[in-house]
Image (spheres, helix red, strand yellow):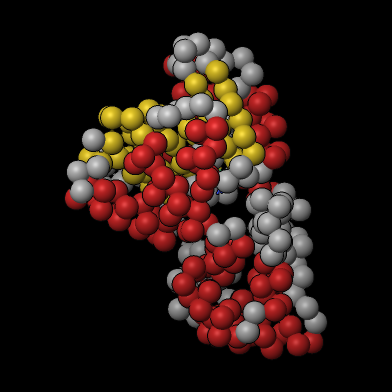
Length: 274
Ligand SMILES: C[S@@+](CC[C@H](N)C(=O)[O-])C[C@H]1O[C@@H](n2cnc3c(N)ncnc32)[C@H](O)[C@@H]1O
């Protein structure tokens, strides 16, 4: 199997326990610290483990380089792990004031601060609308451009405050809703890390890599990703390449959400190679 988002190795550890010594898990992650942690978590499982610090958009080349032609299972758990949100260097969270960076892969060049301080107003508005689906995108972009004239926007707290100023603080009725800056932060994270493009490449590569009856499972955390997965599976089903196993996505139970609020938007879709 290929766990294309190995993270802390939690999922692979569970799968690995059911595989014997003839099994192989290839684990990918763009974050070298995640690879290091996964090495530690997976060190005692019986099957062979190959961990590579690389982008899942290159899955075909990476797997073939290991001498593997076909795989039985591809697992993608998209989204950000809690360790990333807490990591000051990554600058992903507005709950704490951090440098505005957002690169999960440190080899990338452009940071969120670069975009926010350099993009023209229209491009910023388009980006926040397209990747954040925020109807206040134009207003947010206008406020960003106005604020950066007096001083560059360099921290997550500064950006969150500007978005709140643009959209107004949530009223009493909306208090249980998401923070006003959530969508802007999502948009920038998607742009900085080319998330949709990478997911598209992964989905395109999967059919030629999966063995007959092999499965692909994708857990997504926002509607843009979920739509890509849903449409890709549907299209492949219409061409008799996949059979979609999950007609409706599998979502977390109330108990799972109570246990970990961050999973509330998770959607799991599975397809099987025909
Ligand atoms: C939600 S975590 C995965 C957690 C993992 N399933 C576990 O059990 O610990 C997502 C991981 O995907 C990684 N990631 C994000 N985009 C990636 C990409 N394009 N290629 C490879 N890894 C990526 C992140 O660095 C992060 O470690």
